[in-house]
Amino acid sequence: MCSKKKERPNLYIVGFMGTGKSSVGRLVADCLGMIFIDSDREIENSVGRTISQIFEKSGEATFRKLERDFIVEGHPNSGCVVACGGGMITQSELPELLIRKGVVVCLYASVETILQRTSNNQTRPLLNTSDPENRIKNLILEREDAYGSFNVKISTDDLDIQEVAACVSEVYSDQIKS
Image (tube, rainbow, N blue to C red; front, top):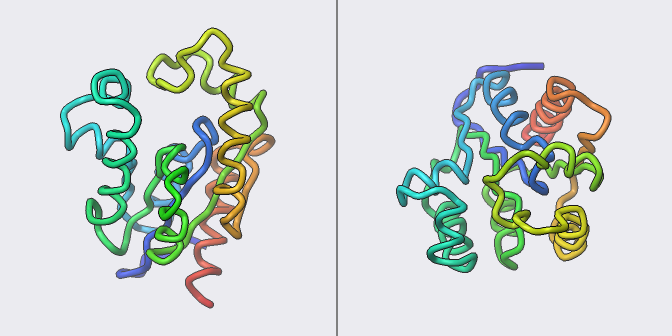
């Protein structure tokens, strides 16, 4: 299932925070012999601030612009597995842009799973609230249409990261054949 071809279209892994995009993306990139890029880390490195600091000092709109800039021109056009920030797809033009630029796989999980995976993580500014469970539910509802715009969706609730990575690798390989 793993292959080492060059100049293949990018694979964009999207989904809500805590669904496993970065963990799975690293494994998939290794399996496929591609470069792994985490959009959030790239943005942090480019501006010299954490996502939380960007949100706190410049606001969410500034962060969303940085995400858009990253997708438009901030990464290679091929040969990469890109773990996209969870809210990146909230920008109306970005889901379609991702689809045009490469293969897109959307990971999802239940609210309970996401809460469990994110509960001890202080680096998620959208969950810095007194009721993170309710915030997760509301954000998922707000993003439902955007996540629904992708043809390939994989639940990460009952799979370990190796199983999810195998599914994503297989989907990618099938998509680039057609």
